[in-house]
Image 1 (tube, one colour):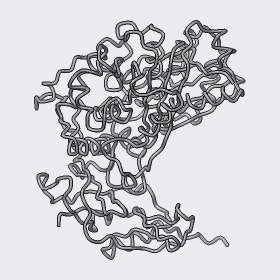
Image 2 (image 1 turned 90 degrees about the vertical axis):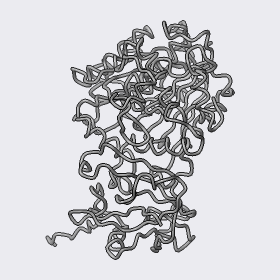
Image 3 (image 1 turned 60 degrees about the horizontal axis):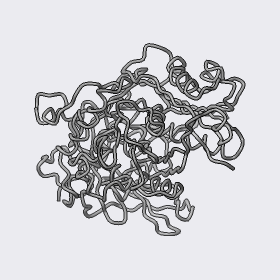
Image 4 (image 1 turned 45 degrees about the vertical axis):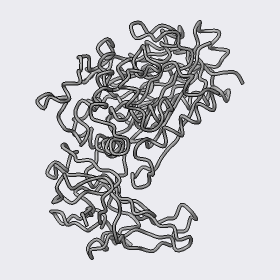
Length: 389
Length: 144
């Protein structure tokens, strides 16, 4: 069996409230990806639809999208791992191609979170945790990540200022990303100004500025066999390594609170499969749903030793010109986080980087790059390593 | 025949809002009512579980017994919520936390009367039964 490539990438603009139906939203990402790949719907052997459930009235959206995108009569189905759904979709697409069952797959990520109110959305998100034993206490995603922030600050002396620096970096790039929801500049002093929205408490120690926003959006990744990739594509990007892991849903079942064990395990698998080390990574997209999530990612991915994450951001080493650029598209903190579309958007950014087509955010001559995409509070961890020819 | 089967939905009483009504560990609620917070232990391999479970994933036995959470655990981490999900707005602000008892950990809330400045990672705390409005129950962590 040959290698497996990504030959096309697309995403919609991420917005607070998409003025259309979910099939129309998904069309936007799909159209960009098939156009990018230079293929038509007839070239696609199967589609994998990725999102978190309970936002849509539509049951089984895969079948609806297949019809709308001209993907009948090819098989289509749904895959879900909360916020890492589309990275899990990529993993599945890889195995479908590697097995020889299909030679071109469309991985369609989407979420229209504005279908429900913000507080209903928090409640849905909270139910991505243990509904029997945790949710009755009134949990929500920011609080779970906040507990990790508290542990990291206590153990390593990480400060609220360090966390703010991650948001400042995100906004530096979010401002120039026309697909992002949040495009205003953010400065560190907003976090120390008690009257500024960025400094308002959400769940201690996290503040509004530490949290990404809900969004509506879609993404699409076209995955192909080596033979098809060489036939269709001038600049295929190869899937070099895939890692995936899970962890106890109830925090009571965890040993690590200063990081995410599933992220570390997924990273170790991906590095091993790709035959590379953290030092080989030229640019990365990490799952910064909260500032602390990016800080933990630095350490779980081996870009910094445990406890040394704050040094990376203080020294601006994760900026575009730094040693290991991270989230130079603005990350989830700027782009917004349409759950099922997020992984595909991260992969799109990295593919454009490796093809030297990232425009204003292009990192100099990257060869190997990484995507870190987390579902729940480290319930699911996916790490993908991509490389160019 | 034709007789409506009685449903054991005691677990509806757990927490401010319970999302589960039927579970094989419904007796947990009866123990709360008698002021005991209980975990479960596998009678076959002695594995202790909290939260309690009906089935042991270590040896696949479903022969479990209850044990009481006693003594103190160490506060590993916590967070105080300024916003709450639907159904919990009247409880704000409140803190959720994890206690480490060595053989197991417990996820729950910190007692409402505890002052913020007293809450510090590493302090010993105990787990006690807490009665909520509307006949609901949960457990909270209290300083010792």
